[in-house]
Image (cartoon, rainbow, N blue to C red; front, side, top):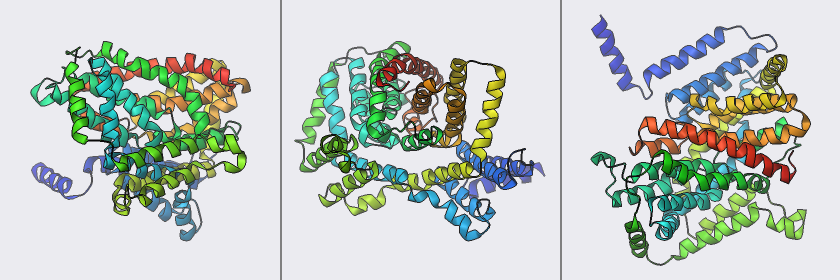
Length: 501
């Protein structure tokens, strides 16, 4: 009997298009949550939506199927359960409500723009140029990779595309040039160090610009909701707030990792020759690369609201309008074509899963779940008698380190950030709310340092085999502590100068 059951399990596990055990666990979670009576203060339909939301998060964490499929599952269940409306028509309208959000289309448009970096070769050229200047020492190559990521960050909201699709191939090519290969057991020569720098540069730059990673526009939305729009982060104000602590972290990171995981080869003069050889092979800058550079310049000027500064408020453009202008400019000049747009799977995948998670968060808010949760957390913390500093620290640290439980930054932000922000805004003295909010904003990307599944870039870099699991987690934790300290003290002082608290 046991043999038959084992054989049956193996058959179904191989036949179905999902991971069977995680799927069973997810189903059990949903059933158990639905059987639990609605807590006091919540309506039954609100608790049902909580069950759907938590089940979706569990499915994403356990990787039952690709995140887009799990998001589609959430849309289907919300529509069938009719928890947001009394009719099927109203429920499907609610389930699809977030797809008209400009924030989501900003991400889609900017991912399409980033495709031009790979197609034209401009991203690779930029990385090689930095290596050709800084590549005498291994730590110099590290700084070259970090600067490359920083330059690309304002224009690539898919941090996975930037760190995993553009910078990581450059990093691997350099490591292979020094015969640093995991398959040969020589990853420690330069590869381990460069892979760690590749990844941690990506996490730092993701927090420096609104358009540097997908969840950032959602963070802006939650900050505005939690503070009743008293704190409104534009593209410019975000960059201004994060530039000083972000650059300090980026400056320190290659040296810190050099101490934590030192490369066997300290001197790498051949890297300069390698980079110059690759640049020579690529030839002069092509016309399409020049168009990409011109488009980047235009986007940066418009996202930074330079026309508004010069000509007045009438010249203010929404960031999503600017992003679509960039896409159109690249298409009309032939830098990318419509087939590129249609085949950019990352953009359309992001549209589905990001839209579904935003929808769930919005519906939870409308049904009063966020208010109920935040009030309960607020009352618990208030009853403990902890001062404002302790309260802020608990909320920020709990938010950051709970990311060990998440395999998606967007899922984590969607699940927890609005509630945590709301609690902090209610409990902290008004004069310190700005400091707390900006620390939460910083924490939304600092948490990406922690694990090998923390964000889309991490499995790509970790999967290349240059870094062991133990080294990854050890370096990630230390970097998270370092970055939290930099943002708390240096960032806090900078935000004081800017008048945020």
